[in-house]
Image (cartoon, rainbow, N blue to C red; front, top):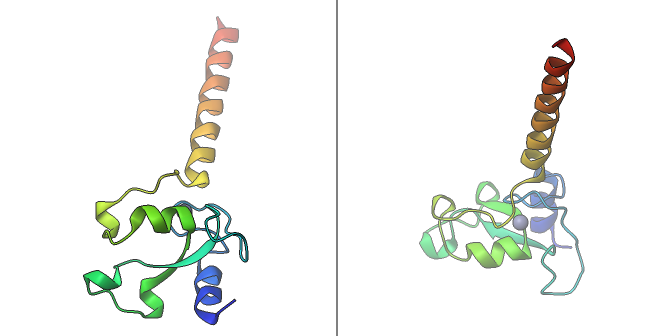
Length: 104
Ligand SMILES: [Zn+2]
């Protein structure tokens, strides 16, 4: 693994910067979870090849984002953290409903 990828992976805890999927190193070229380096501001848009502009990205996000700017693009998968939060919130709401029901 090259040092650029290693540094980027460390920054995002081995997850995709865009969709937070767990990245896999050394898998098939086209594997959607393959760890790649992505430039937040694409080099074709004047982005620099500097540590601050490099993030770890899954192959799927890297392909989908292509040379778009971050604000012109939405990751294909919602970050799992957000999904878990939504689930926890709906469970809490459900319990509140149950509590209300038992008070009647
Ligand atoms: Zn991704």
